[in-house]
Each structure stands twice: as structure tokens, then as C-alpha cells.
Image 1 (cartoon, rainbow, N blue to C red):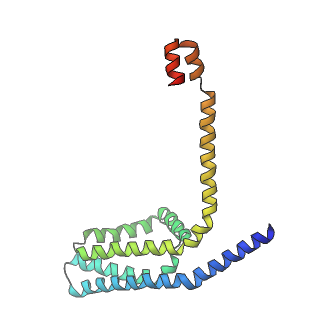
Image 2: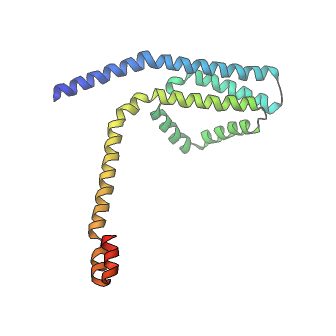
Image 3: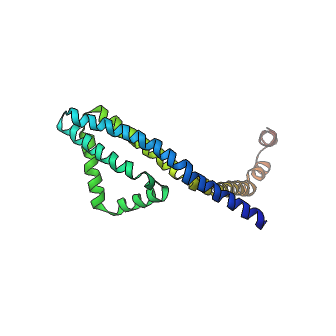
Length: 185
């Protein structure tokens, strides 16, 4: 049994190494190239000009995409939970984010809004791929918890069913034709 566990862990280690060091950098490069293309669209909108709100939003998108391009490796589930907690705790960070979201809300350029939405989708995909091995490692535990929940629900419904007095009440209180409907129907 210990030998099997050793080989399973060895296989998981090899799979993790191959994914983290060979496959994942290629995936990140693919999404990084998509972000470069989106940044180029934002850059074109800055050069073309337009209303002050659209240029301000395009500049913010451009700078944000520059940040995202350099920080793709930080998009993991533990970092996501940590960031959500710290943003919820720090009103200064929340205020800065709200200010920048307001810039996007004032933007009247649909192209910049599309770039922003597409970049959000790209970042969500990167988050998924960066956290894929963690999700695979957690899968057996999640399945075990789901199984336990199903067993507990089934057991509680069986206990409720056994404790129920509907049959006894029907036999004692109802006349024969209605008992036939309750028992045999």
C-alpha cells in the first residue's frame, strides 16, 4: 500500500512539474499575446483621441493591461482569496478601485469597453489554468465531501421516513376504502 502511495505521489509530482514548467508557460504566453493585442487596440484609441472620458479610460486600460501582462503568474486561487480579503478590509484600496471603475462607467467608447470585457475574460482564463493543478489535487476531497453530504441527507430522510406516523395514523383513523387508497395506491 505504501509503495502504491509512493508511485501515485511520484506520478503527481511528475505531472505537476510537466504542467507547471512546460505546459503552463506556453498557455500564459498565448494569453499574454492576446493581452498585447488588446493593449494595441487601447493604444490606437489613445492615439486617435476622442472625448476626454474615452481617452482617460483608454489610458487606464492601457496601463492596466501593461500591469496584467507582467503579472499573469500571480493569478491563482490563493491570491484571489487573499486579494478579496484585503480589498474588503482596506477602504483606501476599495476607494481607488471604485474611482477607476467610475472612469470606465463614464467611458462612451464601445471599443474600450469591449477591450476591458475581453481582457477580463482572458484574465479569468489565466486564473483557471494557473489554478488547474490545485483544483485537480482538491478534486478527491471535494468528491468525498459531496459523497458525505449525500449520505447524510439520505440518512436524515430515512430517519424522517421511519419516524413518520402517517401509516399508523391512516390504519387507525381512516375507514377501509381510504386505507386502501393510502396503502395500495
